[in-house]
Length: 345
Image 1: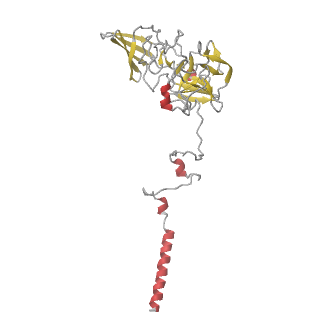
Image 2: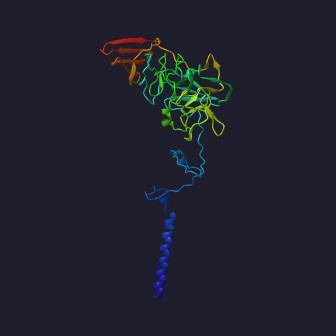
Image 3: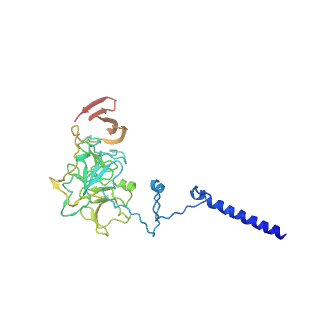
């Protein structure tokens, strides 16, 4: 019995040693295989990424309140505040904002009850004709009021220009019924623009983001502070300082509706800020059409549009296209009669 036991013990030791050698020489399959759905993978966030990790698409993880994060959020500037239908490039101390002046965030013209027979046309706010926004605005010792000058004082983050509250006759454009439900209309050059703050942009960009930038470079926020608190203590230009001493403007529901002037340093010439883009008309300016109300507007093609209005309870239509710098307008009366006008600047 003793000899059998010794032989058995030796055999057991040999089996154990050969099993250990097999495990030691086996490839590390567990380390390289994908985890099962019930497994959790724990990684060291401070470790340098491997080559495969660097090539992977990064995933932003939410940071819980009260925790520290090594990630930094870039400050809000005109370089990153505008929507995708604009093109932005920043050089030195200036942001250049390019757009066609037409919003993609809403339709246009519907609701106007005092119409001058103008329609929205795309504008070439590009290149040397782009909007220029100072990136490091400075307060001026001689602020400029928008009561009589500064017909163009800001640009919304959707690329639409913002004029002051008054029309070209000095009347409040909003109270005169000249604006659509978004606060805009087309001017005498068929250029669409706002005359009151486009507060609908708060719902798109968030209340903590600017809805526009004044031409002096200071941001314009909506009807609340960026933290959602009520707005108090606005000056005559519809602006004030935050707790950190930074100046900004606000939208209001009463005059001046938007920045009531410019507190910042600008190049002021002949009642306007220079340089600024020009909207070039392609046809003679229209005349007021008393009693007309714009009831519908749509984009019917990549460069085609249609506007409807009522007059004396009858419906009229204006269809127009822009192609190869040729502007074609078709005017259709209630009886279906059509008149065509073509313009080539």
